[in-house]
Image 1 (cartoon, rainbow, N blue to C red):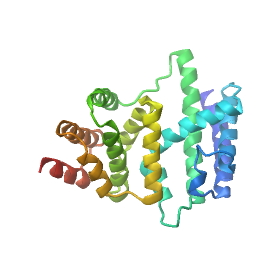
Image 2: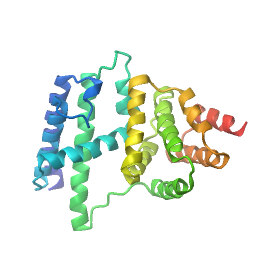
Image 3: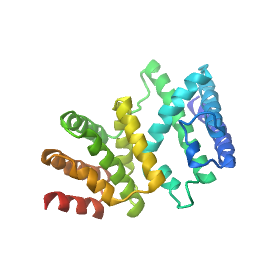
Image 4: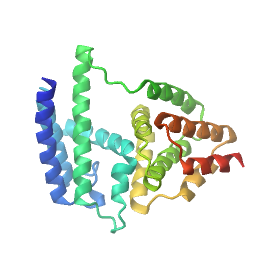
Length: 252
C-alpha cells in the first residue's frame, strides 16, 4: 500500500520537476514568491500528492504548505539546493536546479502526508538517528540560553553551507539536524534564516561574513558554538579544516 502510493507520488513529482525545469525560472522565482509559473506547478503537485493520501487540499492551504516545505528543503539542502543557485551566471536559477528543488519539495510533501497518517496509526516511526535526537535535545537547551540567537544560528547555517561547498563534505546528519531545528523555531526566526540563505544565493558565502557573526557572540556563546561544531563532526564522523580554523580563532 505504502509503496503503491509512493509510486504514484513519484510520477506526480517527476512530472512537476520536468515542468518547472522547463520553465527555467530566475532566482526571483523561488518558492514563496507569488503568481509565478513555478509556484503554480508546485502548488498543483502538492494538491495531487495530498489526493494520493485521500486528503482534499484547497489551493490556499497548498500554498501555505509550499512555504513551509520550501523553508524546510532549503534548510536541509543548504549546499545541495542553494549552492546550486550560485553558479555565477547572474542570478539565474538553472533549469536543473529548479527541477531538483521541486523534486525535493515533492518528497518533503510525501513525508508530511505519510507522517499525518502515522499519527493516526501510531505505528510509523518518523524519527531520526538516536545521536541526532540527543544532539537536538541538547541544542534546544543551548538555544534557550543564548543571548545572540540569530548570530548563532546564521553562523551555523552559513558555516555548514560553506564547508559542504568548499570541502566537499556531505554532512548528511548535520543537515538533517539543522532541518529538524528549523521546524522548531518560531516563524520570525525561521524567516530571518531563510533571508540569510537567500543572501547566500544572491551574494555568495564567505568566511568573513561568518566570522563577523561569530564575533558578536558572547564568550559563553562562543564556547557553545565550538561545542556545537564538534557535535556536528561527531554526528557525521568527519573532520573539517574550516571548523578547526574557527576553533583556533575562538581560542586565540
